[in-house]
Image 1 (cartoon, one colour):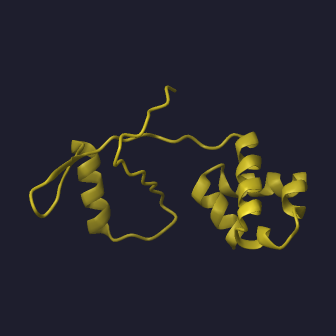
Image 2: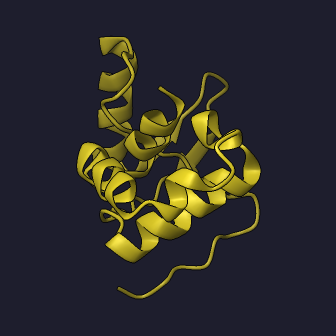
Length: 110
């Protein structure tokens, strides 16, 4: 996969089904993704580029967990690296999250 540089003023948004969102919001998002264009209330037009982000590899999961531990996310904040150094715990978090970033963060916070 060829990396794409972000244009100035670009916004990155991640969507997943791990949070409840109203049907009208999701319908509007689906329409915008299908057409590639968003028209705001004032008539301004914005263009959308959709990029599919694959699941993290096992190595990437380890790196993300280490980053969560360093920045103090959830239960990793006070365990002094015990979770990151425990191969079984890392494998469990990878299994529970499926290698998906938002679910991995949710697993560390819960």
